[in-house]
Amino acid sequence: MTARNELRLLPWSGPEGKPCYLSTDHRDGHMSRLADNIEAVQLGMAAELLEQALEVLGDEDADLGELRPLATKLTEALRDVIRVATSRGHLLAVSEPDRS
Image (cartoon, rainbow, N blue to C red; front, top):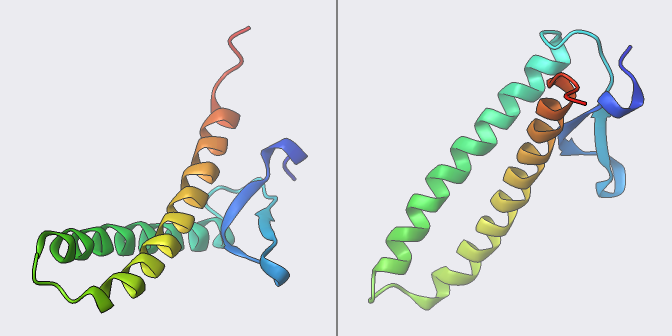
């Protein structure tokens, strides 16, 4: 198994919103691939949501009632993207050779 400092932050939360981590020696194992696929979906959804947000914000005649649900969805997408970035940044740091 991986050392504690090599745990992968997964793209979903556990009970009570606590982060979930994966400890494995197999980056191509089932759970790693599942996490990769979910991250890809989350990033794709965030990109689509950004396009929608740009359209709504660019439309001066847009209904103000659209902004609250849009802000909620953007907040959720941003949370997911930050989790992906944190996980991938950690994975990059762990895989880089020690330069000391």
